[in-house]
Amino acid sequence: METKYLKKAIEYRKLIDTLMSGNEYADIVLYNGQIINVITREIYTGSIAIKDKYIVLVGNCDDLIGPNTTVVDVTGKYLAPGFIDSHMHFESSMLTITEFSRLSIPSGTTTLIADPHEIANVLGPVGIKAMADEIKNVPNKVYLVVPALTPDSPKLETAGYDISSKDMEEILNYDNIIGIGELQGFSNAKHVYRNTPEIVTDLLASTMYARSRNMVVDGNAPSLFGKELAAHIIAAGGKASCHETTTKEEAVEKLRQGVYLFIREGSTQKNMAECIRAVTEEKMDSRRCILVTDDMLPADLEKLGHMNEVVRRTIKQGVNPVEAIQMVTINPATYFGLEDVGVLAPGKIADIVVISDLNEMKVEGVFIDGKLVASEGKLLIDLPSYTYPDLVKNSVKKGPISERDIEIRANGSTARVRCIVLIPDQNLTGKCEENLRVFNGIVLPDVSKDVLEIVCVERHGRTGNIAKAFVKGFGMKEGAFAESVSHDTHNIIAVGTNLKDIVVAVNRVIEMGGGIAIANRGRIIGDMRLPVGGLITDEMNGHEVSEKVAELERIVEQELGCKIHGPFMHLSFLSLSTSPEWKITDKGLIDVNEFKILSPVVE
Image (cartoon, rainbow, N blue to C red; front, side, top):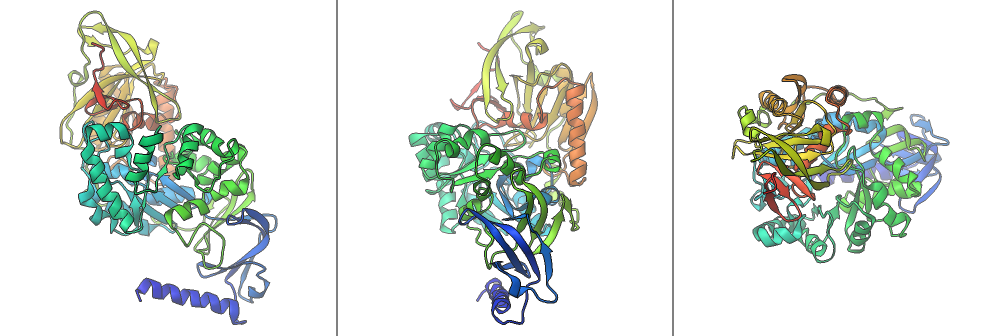
């Protein structure tokens, strides 16, 4: 018998002795609470007995209270399984796993399923393994689902490392990895099949290998219906999830086709209110509905909470509280095959959330592995900081740029240009055309029309590409800002009202080896280093990162006049080449729907 199974047999024998011997008792009893039973969708009065890290009994636990049992009176409070975020990216928070956990555990999140898609695009298996190695530093459960393909659109963008099926055996057999993450490489199913059919074959090789090992494969199917959705589901091995659903009609279609609907409600991508209408209006079964965040800002984790806040918002949309809690407990545990968590039942890990106000999802206490780890929003345990190895740092391989590098040129005194249109709280974009002034052959941004220049600079040292286009929606009046966080290949992306400030901001990001930089009137007025893959900082704790990002956002708002909240995250999604309609990558302005590169100037 393998060591881990023998160990669990010994642990379970101890639980049986506690129940049956008459002289063994629970370590802790949460006494007389309101049990949230996500198996039967009930709430009833009962107690929970804990032995070591396991739940030993739910119900009447009086016989298990001994002289050394700690009895916690939870009368009037609700007891729920620990919450699970089923799809998220640590890189989008700019936090290490440790610091994300520090901020999320007090609000009841005890399990995280992360897709290291971002660091994988920059560093490949080296980055994925470095992130997996950090998991041992935290008390909560953290698992990774890894990309089967980088970049997502090989003909349209440049990543730091090209992952394919050749890497799957190595990566999927690494510790704490439970499957393949979002299949963005087949999101635009029609055009991928038509233009790069070899990707479909390679993805199938990866997904079939994962399925042979009983691992999950997450889908990514924005705006897919009918044959294209069916093809995407099959590419995932016949069982898929999707966190990119934005309309009720999509939600209905995907649920009918057996897709696990990952309903996203993050810091800048808010789709829950629309998607949940499939349940509240169409009365569809919610067993395959799972609430996720995808991308969270550290300040939101601190001030609003994490999965408890998403559940609270879902309840406000008319969903029964227990049903909403199912979407962050038993539903994801079933999808991922996490047999030890997600329900309150004998033999399960004692990851338990104590809730004082059910409708407002006010979390009073959090138990992980049977130990009280957070109370009243405060972490009670010490989490040592974590420093990443040098092999995942110094990832920016690009030299400084000049204004000439980012000029968009045209003849005449005016030019008709194509503009990406930013949509608040979505990673989808619109498109439009505008007339701009041309001076000395250079097309100029126009703040009166809210038309700014946007650039994407390849930073991995593979092509030297610099793409230029225009964007509407930021509302900026001055300056520029740049960052090395740009989904999913994470080249340097910048937006600004003038070329000089764009260049100053981009060159500061290059100088720092990755990060965020804000420029105005030719000088840097704010910056932040992100040394780990140009995505994450291991130089500050979670609160410090939250404060720093808030400071930079205030500068962008107050000094540059930016009107969009979460400006750095919104900018980062303007390079997501798998999400409609127009985006920018290092290769140019991308028409995602038509799978082609456009000129920024209408010829």
